[in-house]
Amino acid sequence: MSPIPRAYHHGDLRAALLAAGLELARGGVDAVTVREVTRVAGVSPNAAYRHFADHRSLVVAVALEAQGALADAMAARISALSSGLEGPDAALATLRGVGLGYIDFALAEPGWFKLALVTFDPSAGAAPAVTVAQSVPPPFQMLVDALDGMVAADLMTAAQREHAEWPAWAAVHGFADIATRGPLQGADPTMLSGLGVVVVDRIIAGISAA
Image (cartoon, rainbow, N blue to C red; front, top):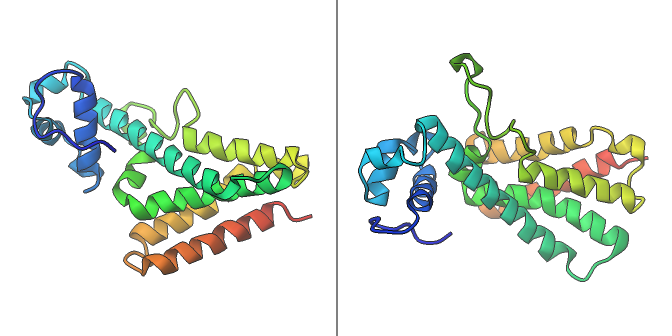
């Protein structure tokens, strides 16, 4: 990520506010307030309303930025694992990269990880955002595409592929969650990374078992 500007002088105010929001999100979703975002960006609180209708709109926009960062981390792990591979080997490496990249991101940026999957209380009168939106979130689409690639490479049957994204996501997300804010929070990072590999490889073995 580019450095957060200490003060906003000219140019793209929306981008400066989003960058400030991401910096604050490292301290938790609740840290992303209009007052704090505009303070970090170096503008008055009223300036935010030129680009965001309200606090919720601002948080959703910052969450979408966090989703993009999550997708980038997944893509980087896929690239590292699949470089030079073809066919079934590449398909398997891609699916592993999706899961391991997801865990990498959660461990490296727990605040962004939580924000990337933020939802809002439906009782407030609005449908959940970010995790349920008009378009499929990029990280989830990458999982869907990787599973489809497993079928194309004859590593999974069509029957095994059906709904496989849900147990795969549940296992990997569940581990990421307990590693960042559950009983494994604060554990040795090397140990957590190793456990992440175990989780990813076992869920892949499970969903692709004959």
